[in-house]
Length: 421
Ligand code: URP
Ligand code: ZN
Ligand code: ZN
Image: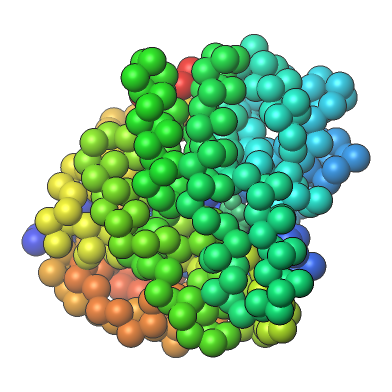
């Protein structure tokens, strides 16, 4: 039977898409603390109906084995819809053979790490080989663009000098490490002709590298994350509490925030994601005496839509149309999910957020649905609240209640990517 929803005075928007999350990810000797169930449920509470999670290839193993491992965690457990990026951490002749298969299975974006030396990082030789194959098969290469060798050197230097507090995480990843790697990535993407996307961009130097690439009419897509727009590195100037915001790249300066907001309005930054990689406080304590052992990441999957609305739209930094583009439509287009996702239209999935634009509320860990015991935004008052969420036409969230069980979330297989939106 049809159901009538009274949305008087509300905004009605496409369901949010967060293309950068890490659910139950094995990382730095532990696992990120949200499962597919808790993470996608928290996302729905915050108006995000689809997430794209990162599968990590284990070095020496196949992409297929990694896909099976991640499918095992997601299938039957997701509450909201999800899709996968494949992180290639070991590109060799047999990995190359698997790229075509992955694309046929709807995994059309391949993540690379220019950082995390000795763990996830690939070298430029592997990057070029991967780009050539991915371009040939119709996919996209995405990147964590920071110079892993420089960072490795600076981390070791700080540890040897006895600089072990969280602020040294920040000081070991200066802006130049990101600017240099972003430029190198853009150059390699230009040379190979492979569509490229830089994840979690934080700073002016990196965005300028992309701005320069546009002068040769190259398109490199850019994602920033909500924390880089709202928070800055002064948070590291407190003892171990700064560990809440230990993430890579680290929070930057106010001038970088200004550059990123401008980048959104200039169309250079197309996506605002979260890089949701939550840990409980006891996990953060693994690095109590050594910042390099603090698991990197922070929780945000639930609050991206409300934070960006409050700080961006309400404060006049971006328009409502831009808000919808960067929280939903652009990610759907860039990653081959449009028009199934990212729009309200006949034939689309009817993922819809009904949003109360003037309602104020305060973010606090005691009320959130993420599986973490702290919030990076504790006590922050925001204006605008998600009231009702529909996923594939069904009301899944209403007035803070989730009305569906795990298993409702579906895998979204994506189309080939041409690098144009
Ligand atoms: O600190 C972060 N970003 N943790 C998750 C892994 C990554 O680099 O995206
Ligand atoms: Zn990263
Ligand atoms: Zn990430």
